[in-house]
Length: 440
Image 1 (cartoon, rainbow, N blue to C red):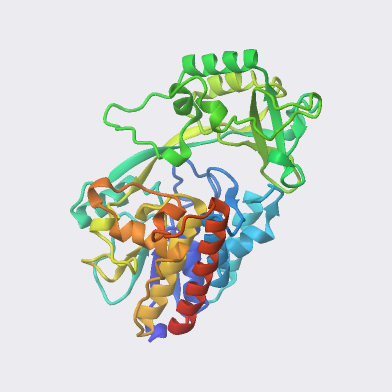
Image 2: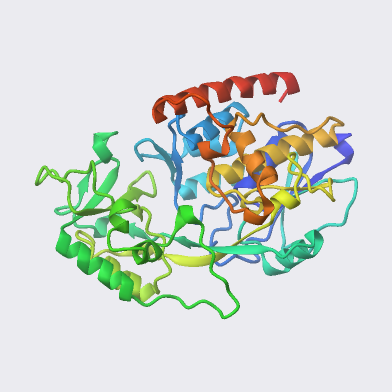
C-alpha cells in the first residue's frame, strides 16, 4: 500500500523534482533528498531545488522539432517542470527560456508545500541496499565522488565521464546598444535576441585570441570527452577558422539594420530574466580562465565594457553505461527496486533529464500501488529516449539529446519540415493511446 511504502529520491534537480511530483500527484509518499545547501557541486550555488546551472533555455517550443514534441508529451503527462517553465518564461523567440531564479523558487515552494513530499537536506554517500522500498537515483551529471564510486561498485562497470562547460552571463546595462541590435533570425519572432555584429577583421582577431588564450588546466588523470551538443567555444574554433561562423556565431538571417546586410559573424545574447537585466552568451560555453574570458569577450563589438554576472566554467559530467544496466522501465536489471533518472542515465539537456524523471516517477508510483511499470511507445519522444538508453550498442553508447534520429525509421521521403510534422502527429496519437490504455 502507498501509505506504507515511501519512495526515496536522491537528487533535487530537474529529474528528481519531476519524479517527486509525479509520485505525489498519484498519492504516493516521497522522501526527496538533496545535499544542498550543506554541500554544493562545482556548478551549483543556489539552495533551491531544480537549479539551472548552464543555459536558461529549454530549447525549441516548435512541436515539429524533437525537443518541442517532447515538451508537448510532457505537458500532456502533467509535467511540473514544463508547467513552471511556462510560468516563468522570458522572451526567446520560438525557444522556451526561463527566469532561472523564479523557476527554481517556484518548484521548490510547490514541493515544499505538498504534504506528501518530505524534503531532506543531507548528502548521501552510498547506494541504499536492496529492499521492498523503492529508490530513484537522480543525482545528475555532477554526482558527488563518493556516490559515483558507490554506483560504479554497484554496477560493476567503470563509470564514464565527459566534460561540459557553462556560458557566461552579462549585465544588460553594460552593453553598448549603439552597436548591438535586437533581432531574431530571419525576423522569426519579435526580436528577442541581442546581436553583436563582427566584420571579417574583428572576427579574425577574435578567433586568434581565442586560440591563444589561457585555459583552466585539467588534472593528470582526467580524460576529456566532450558532449558534441555542448562543445566549448574554443574547441569549436580549434576545428577550423570558419567553424564558429557555421555554429554559434552564424550570421545568416541576422541583417544589421544599420547596413541592411548580414555581418561577417554574430555573437548572440539571450535574456536570462524577465526584467532583461542579464543576458546569456548563446553557445559560448568555455573553459577559458576568468581573466581571459574578461579580456577576450570584451573584444566582441558592443561588449567592450561588459560586466559579467557569471563567468563560464568547466565541470565533469558523469553517466552510466545504461544499455548494459537498465530495463526500459528505468529500473536496474539487477536491482529492480532502484530506478535511474536524469542525465546520469545518459540523456543530455534539461528537458530530456526532466522527461526521464517523469517516467521514473510514473513507474515508481505504479510499482508501489501494485501495478506493472510501463514503457512509452517507440514512436514518441519519450519512447525514443528510453530506446536510446536501453537498446543502443553498449560499446558505442554516448549521451544524447532527443532527436528524430532516435525514432523508428521513417519510410516516406518527404521534406524535413513535413516529416517533423507527421512524426509529431503520429507521436501524439501514440502517446494518447498509451495513456488511455495504461491509465497514465
